[in-house]
Length: 296
Image (cartoon, rainbow, N blue to C red):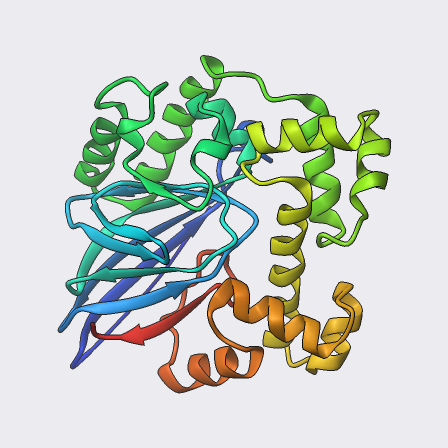
């Protein structure tokens, strides 16, 4: 089922379409989000780390993505693996495409590339070494030519199903360990997680780096912070959130928040309240994953 919302005003128009992938693709493919923006001026958005990989299939307009310590990338279609640092996305006010959220192990399966090579990076998916040249670009063009979001999501289901059949099978133990890490919001200790799947901590770390992109400890940090943002957005206080998410104290929560978003929890919340958020603008429906920064 596809949910479409839209709006317009003196500043332009927006349309967001949300859908779940076909059940045969779940849980590896998490969600689809179609976006069409026609705004009156350039926009900038801060994207916080989330426990997923992102594939943006652009329909023609480019986005400029900046991350500390790396040169900016200007791309139409984008792949971003798991990250522990924020990114700044900029566009000229016009943007359209479909964003696919993937469990990191599913991205490893689809693209066949060790995920540690892509962690904290943004790349053109057609340039990944195990992707057939032009495959992603051709799919994006075909999606953009279709008349409705429902038709686009159907084509995307079929394409991802074909790619999955020819992909690299992920380790069942990695899939199980990742699911448990997500279920606990990153709270399960790494030694216990390794024991639960029958590996040593070193084995778990090695396979996580290959198929998730981050080691289990770093992945747990991202998932803890993601849960904390969710609780804070729901109105929980910082001290309560810190206790519920397994931080040592409120100062520990604030430090991790600053390290992975560039803002303290208070700054992030006030900025979201002050700038406003386009419905459906966050990468995960119902979660505070981004921050509108305005024009460059």
